[in-house]
Image 1 (spheres, helix red, strand yellow):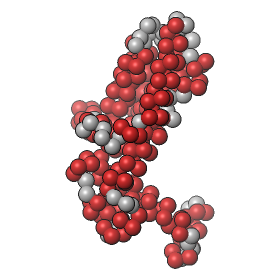
Image 2: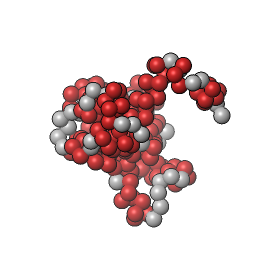
Image 3: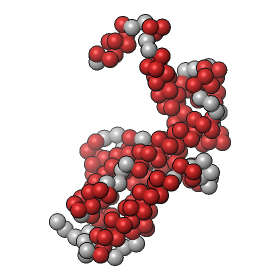
Image 4: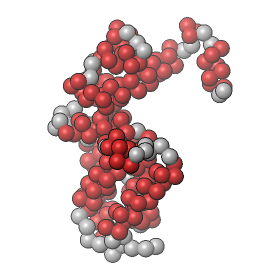
Length: 219
């Protein structure tokens, strides 16, 4: 057992710092909200269902959140922030094989480890992204920077003359498929994506598929 867990067990709840209690409760609420929003969508989700999943009363839930919309926007912002950090365009000098390969790996691992978050993003996008669009400014700028990096690689002859934005769309589509259609994949394959060896094989397949299609040179 970790020292933090021992401390939590030995310290009476009433004596713990309020900040620690609040952080623990918000983490539980966020986990419950992700589960419910991914399952029911924004329109179908209710604060009662989120409270039940978090083991709280509805009144307790509303002590920590302002509204369903505010909670949903916070979850969306967390997802956007996660994906903003994924593309390492600052590593452009390492070339497309390294940077795109790492990008695909991180995207695939995110799909394997956080499928519900990806499904929330997809569902919000499919309903027109009314609450997501205002959060996408930084993501749009980062995407433009990634496009500039890919364009530079094309100009340097390190890959074939692809449309950089379409290449990103294709990578997003393939990698996020493993989250958004997790149950379909499990049905046709007859098993889940939980095995590490299996995940590594899938990452290798997707990486090779994308790099060959983009004409990324060896080395």
